[in-house]
Structures are given as C-alpha cells and as structure tokens.
Image (cartoon, rainbow, N blue to C red):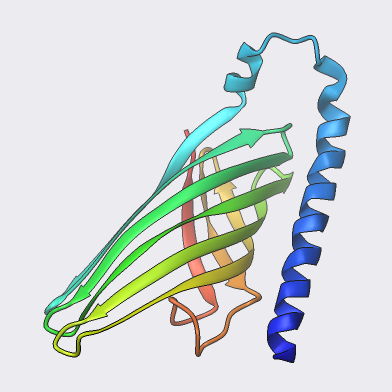
Length: 180
C-alpha cells in the first residue's frame, strides 16, 4: 500500500512539475501574441510509429500516430495515441489502447532528451479458460537519442516500471521517432 501511495505522489509531482516547466516556456514565447493563428500550424509536426511482430502462432501489431508542437528550436511538446493487438494462437488475445504526453528538449541539434508519460489499457482474453483481465499501465519514460533531420534514434527508460504489473517485459526500450 505504501508503494502504491508513493507512486501516486510521484506521478502528481511529475505532472505538476511538467506543467510548471512548460508554462514557463510558453510565458517566454508569448511575445508574438498578435501573430496570425496560421503560424501555429507552421510549428506542428506529425509522425508516429508502426510495430509489427510475427512468429509461429504469434502476432503483434501496433500503430501510434502522434503530433508535436515546436515551441522553439530547443523545446517541443506533444501527444500520441496508441492502438495494438497481440495474439498467441490458442492461448490469448490482448487489445491495447491509450495515449501519452511527451516533452522533447534538444540542447544541441544532434541530441534529443525526452520525458513521456504513457497510460495504456491492456485487455486480455485467455482462450479456453473463460478468463479475462483488464488493467491500466502507467509508464514514465526518460529518454535520450541521436537526432538527424526528422529522425531520432535512442532509448528510453520507464522509471515507474514494475515487472509484476506491466505490459512490457523490460523497463528499457529502444525507439525511432520520425516527425514530418
């Protein structure tokens, strides 16, 4: 119970810090309040990811569209949706859906640091057992990557990872981000 309370407090602190940090960033950028609204769309980039995994009797398909707003040359904020389906022949089927918020910082053009909070629902039906489970998985990723143009390759680590209650098998994940 203490661990759960600690995680709730940690999530709350993170969300408040995240909002305060980006509020300060927006305050710095409000000099051009009279700029036309069309300038907003000049700073928006769309991207996302697609994941496909196949094996003997195993299928994993994921799609994750996303968008970011470039606050300036150094800072971007955005959001993503995630949908997925995993099935293991004659064992189970899992449906995933959720979303995330992401903050990106480029201290130099080639390096990208990220903070991402992700909330994913996993609903699993076990074949033959008439058993099903459903739970929400919360992840807080800290990441770093090498950026070249619109592509960033790197890794991220879930600081809230719990091996007993996660949809992922590991706290560390490599990533490829593409925004156009």
